[in-house]
Length: 433
Image (cartoon, rainbow, N blue to C red; front, top):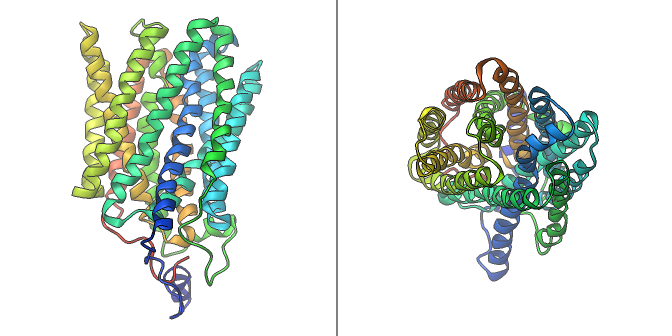
């Protein structure tokens, strides 16, 4: 009886409850649907613009503030661990106060804290601003995923969520281009500060995001759970295994990604001897590959299913990382091909995450479920860059990136196969709120 009451929290409703899946086929609904797609993608793209600045500017920051590579990795870890906390509570707050409202809050937050990073004068101040930025950065993704997944049709959810994810590449490309111009026209010890000032730009876009937006689902018969109740609900008997498996899946998925992305600009500069222009070109090629990887993965997810597609993406990522790090590069053309494949493969891993996670949890705690698993996974995986930073001094940067990346990809694949296949699943049912 006790279990039945717990299950009814998410899956039952009075007979008179409105049918949530019956979306009005009118112009107003179509307009809202399009705005949700744009807003979710724009929010994640702006998040990518702000967050990737740190990896691009890391070399100049270490030199300017006289910090070691190990300390640089530790600062990256502090930001990523903070993102776990921000994501947990961001998703749960979206369940309580609404997806659109919380989306506005977090975009404004990571814009301001990114800009304030420019004022850092030492490692302590840098850690403070990057930690605060991480709190807001972590909160954005689960809120956007919950919002967009509830508008998406079941048969095309993989493609739509992958499209949202691909916006990160656009934001990353914008920050890379900004890096090139700022570092080309200002001394490195000042250029990184000007780069972070540009982080204020998303604060302007927030006024575009909020106009004409509303949530797909609204509060119904049940009073919304507060954030702590929402997170606690994830560990009830009927959801505990899903929560733990999803979290472990994300530890490996994030860790594989961070193993490459966190140190790729530094690797290109120190191991391949590239300066600002060369590094920028390689990064842009990787980003183009990433954009293609994100969107193509969505098609595969809708066609072949979540588990087979994600497993193939991990295999592709492992192969491309090994090829990039250990293939003798005799020409720039070959280098571009290899880095394109790296970008495409690691982004194909990320492209399916939104669809997979949003289909694991009931609507009432979808934000909490997506936010907790994605960001706790991110927080644990954040120790990967710190580990690579300390391993690099003994074993070399390239070898350390490869070993950590492969181990975490294998971990994520194993966890994925303990979760159910959810392709085509209806995630909003009658009576859910």
